[in-house]
Length: 141
Image (cartoon, rainbow, N blue to C red; front, top):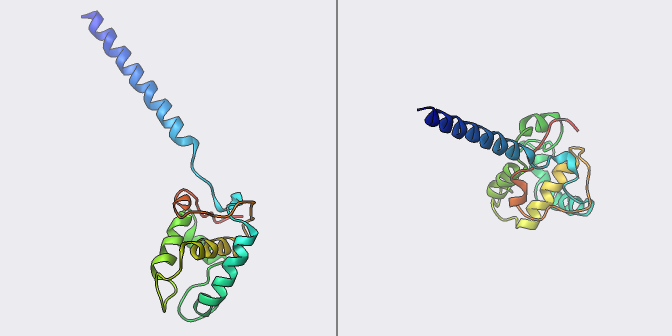
């Protein structure tokens, strides 16, 4: 009988240790935030050109779209993935031709929005939409 209890104790201890290790490993990488220099200056410059041509009419104080920078924007998007913004733009923008921006234009516009909110550029541009899934917006710079 004692051997059975001992074996159960060992199994319990090993299970507990495995759960602790798995939890610690899962907690190591939470992805990046927009504070981490996740886009390049050149990309944001291209994004500004696309924004000016296809977005600004509605989003720069226009009656249709919200402004894409400032405290209101950051409070709405804080703790949400950058991919969520990418997805909204990809599916519904521009309002007069939804879904017509190609992936490079979308990534460039996202880079411009991040820059317009005061977050720093880095050396590497955003390269894929899937890379945005674990990248988070934050409210404070």
